[in-house]
Image 1 (spheres, rainbow, N blue to C red):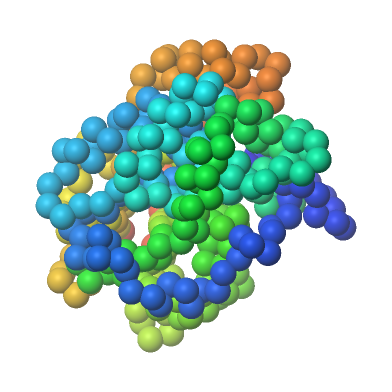
Image 2 (image 1 turned 30 degrees about the horizontal axis):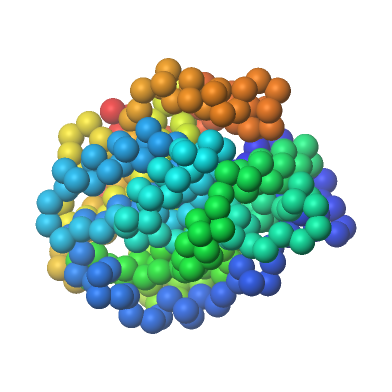
Length: 345
């Protein structure tokens, strides 16, 4: 969750900018084998940044139901955010936890024990310097408001969720995270950071330590499929879906999910994607459009977050028009992988 506006770095990380120690892990954790339910998959959906959008959740479930073969649906965090109505919060949580789920910073902070004034709780976003202080402050207040929609039992369910997972599709080994290879709230897989060649070298090091072919992530709110060429010629990919519950491109109201599968996606769903070679042959990695009724989504958002509210100030413009970002910016194959393709269907 972020805004592109610039910001000067603070000397002492404030709530919403810090990355707590308990959010962190080493890339080597991904060397553990996948659980049985995530091995030998033919279709994997990774859904990040649902943000409490119940209509988007219903659309994702319908899309997943239409898939065939050995399949798994993984929600990789921040499935809550705009669902400040307790009934909507409960419906989102029930729908998500019927499948495999990881916690993002939102779920982690909702589950945390609150000390002192609840209004001072940070959102756990670990926002980078380019996000303005006012955006960070609003996110902290959104989290405090959202927490009042929860019950102790719901928070306990969130606390029990893992921070990371590993899956295998057709021999392709994937690390599934909310943030990056080192932290639940890390921004190392943000499209902004991945533009930097020196940072891409750091990411190559993460792949070497993790022993995976690709990472599926979210957290940073803008999509990017970044290809990286390893020193031995192997191709690695970062699959960041951006957001399932909000628009990702200018003039395009659809959310996105990441589909990794042994078969092409259904016609009309592809926004962009690439093909990889794995042990069993071709694996398709695609960003699929999660289409909803824009008017209904906006009306529901306004019911819970009317004009003047913190979420309205931070997000309603994007919900109406999408961010200033395009498909061409999101697909970044290594030069040695010309098969990458984009579609604006």
